[in-house]
Length: 397
Image (cartoon, rainbow, N blue to C red; front, top):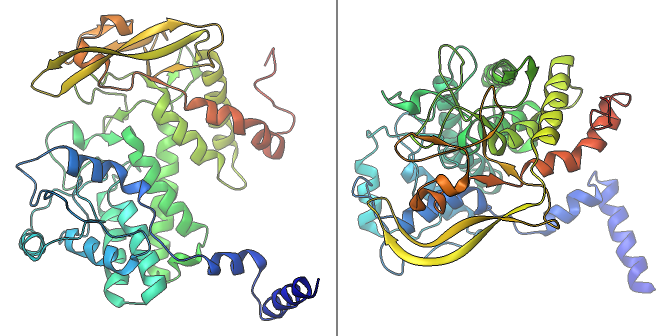
């Protein structure tokens, strides 16, 4: 009892000084940089040798712990290019050799900078964490240069390409694929919501970032696909001028893409005091997710004979199984106009079942997803808060 009393007196003391219990709990935890947002980058670096990389991983390459914030941030500085952006598919947690560091420093003018695979916006967030810990001006400067890269890369219509400077291939298109657009806007939303982590941003830059944030939201609203007269969800990629859905890679057709759309809707649902356009976009997307779900179906991964192709080695296969106990599942793509689940081979040939996809792509790409369920699970709470009289999941709506 005495110890508990002392504990509460301790809490009250710090609360008098202006610290909330939540903040006290946060301060008690060691500051760290979460490795998950960098997962795609590091998996590619260790898993795929790329002769075009400035550096590749060594055998038994050691890694920093997430709490090694300053060392990780210093790595991020090494990877940053002179235009403020970052290349993809390197591990910022790797303990680099002197030779690797020298190679990175010598390649600062190679501007293969991108937002793909969780690149650039994740680096800026990590630098902000490092600056909050060490107050080292070089981390602040690098974060600001990264934010300027985001400003420079945005199209006038509010979209972002996958790579900047622009290339001549599909990477110049507005890219929702793999959460690119969502990731950039989450960062800008945190800044716009006055997250204290970004308090180092001056008023002039803040106003510029606020403007591009709202332009990004407007681009999302303008690109929601109208099919058969109704708003549905979003495609993976859009032409940067016409804002029409377009092909990405040859097996990524311009269909309604539920995986990427989930992240977009969750972002919209996180906006405080949404306007009528945002509410309508969410309501229509929720109706689409409900209408497009597939019941009594699961996808099973099975063992298979080893298959080596120019793209990858496959040791498994995937089959669609009828299962009355299976939770709802969604196809990654739905065909615009017919709204049928859509699949594709590397030659660009469209097919309408997983069985028709060639083996290497069948087990080497995520053709189905459960992610829209995240939106449906959060919908009721969101709806009751912002549109209490318009539950689109009720029958007859």
